[in-house]
Amino acid sequence: MHLFLAKQFSFTETHQEGTETIETVCLPLEQAVKMVINSQITHAPSCVLILKAIHAI
Image (cartoon, rainbow, N blue to C red; front, side, top):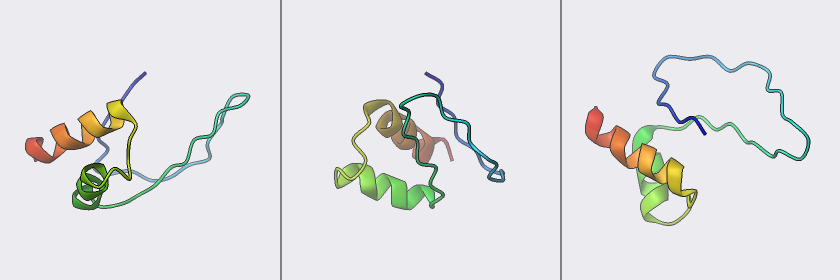
């Protein structure tokens, strides 16, 4: 598993494997933090990354 914070990016076509269901979403970091706190984002590695990222900025 790889997690990263992208600051300047553009969306491209995704290539999912087999039964993967991946949704790419673009939203402000502050909104993502609120979603973690409100249990709208529950994927533990993503929660850790989001909370660490807000302190790195």
